[in-house]
Image 1: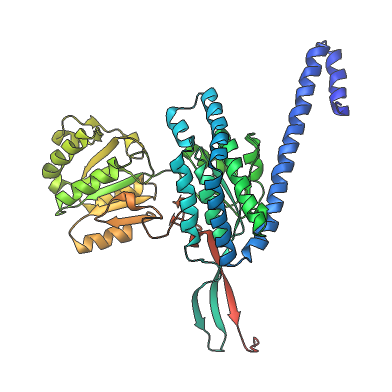
Image 2 (image 1 turned 120 degrees about the horizontal axis):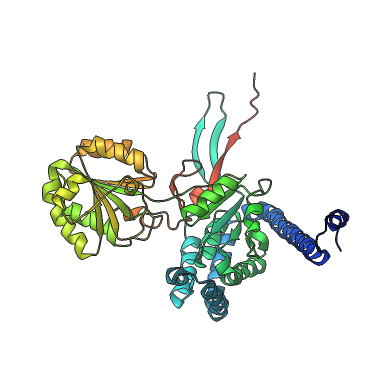
Amino acid sequence: MLCKASFALLRFNLKAGLQTFDLLNYLYMIEIKGRMKMSVESTITGMAKAARAASVEISRCSSIQKNDVLFRIADKIERNASSIKESNQKDLEFAKEKGLSDAMIDRLTVKDSTISSMAGGLREVAQLEDPVGTMTKSWKRPNGLLVSRMRIPLGVIGIIYESRPNVTIDAAGLCLKAGNAVILRGGSEALNSNQALADIASEALRETGLPEKSVQIVPVRDREAVNILLKQEKYVDMIIPRGGEGLIRFVVENSKIPVLKHYKGVCHVYVDNGADLEMAKDICFNSKVQRPGVCNSMETMLVHKAVAEEFLPRMGERFSEAGVEIRGCSETRRILPDAKEAVEEDWPEEYLDLILAVKVVEDMNEALRHIAEYGSAHTETIVTSDYERARQFLREADSSVVLVNASTRFNDGGHLGLGAEIGISTSKLHAFGPMGLEELTTTKFVVLGDGQIRE
């Protein structure tokens, strides 16, 4: 049924001579779209309310209860591998119809190794120390009050991500262990896979007597669902976007909820005067070539002028053999004539490919200025044998992870001893760097007294 306003518009336009059939069709489509939006809004709001209620219950659960459900989800994933892959096949067919790239389809594909990785990851998280309820520090006041800070869950976390179905399980496992409820919004191309995995998590929660709404997947492809989720500030405490820079900027610009940002990884390696050049070659090569398509790979190499003549030809040859395209400053191109000319747009670029910007600098201070201007606060490395310059670089390079004599590729929760990570934050509120279990909690003050009153 068309609403009264629609009929009024119909009568007005008929007087203007518009075709009745075309106008009715137009009005009908407006009505349908309006109802669809209301339906999506009702769905997302209902999910957010349910997640808030579930977060209160899951926050009270013991480590034993949370570990039990993680082990149970892992077992169910392995037992239901065939049905998960059947759901994934539907997504692959959908992705091919949409014309997604081979790289995207590869990330979307659930293989036997994906199943093993998801199950293994859950078991690893279950064995990590539970941060909830731990006291980070305590002190006693002159009046006898004992003041402490206790770790508590964040509450409800919304995670918006692209393509990889394993993120559904990785994120759910970490959020549950930290005592949070989670709303997952994966890419439209992975809806069937994500739903199958979320259903397994919900079933395991139900079987262990924990609130099954602690893990929910947004069940619609409609992009409006993201906009609505980003406005649920009454129920959702934090949004974590995982994906390309475009997705993250969209989330930041449209969210009413605090967002943990990670726009891109423009990571630098600075080769200092007096560095061990053999070590520098290995670090630079690993930082760029080992896996160039990830956010912690090196995108710009900075080289002190005193070592450039010796270092760049040897490094350039090794990069050339690996298929790396070098885009260099004028001094770099004098030493490496085959290098392409670097333009201004190259310095802040995240290539995610076998392309490397190279600049020869006067000294470490120029390297630090370059990083401050063009970096993304992700990862920086200095290769040096000078203790004082290493300390200065650690203090002044304003990034989430700063390394001395080690590859940028170590900016990873697992390699830094966090056990697992939900992402890397390049904003300083509420976390900076890889986010493990502890970063999915916050602290509250608890105060113990024995009758003190304030005078």
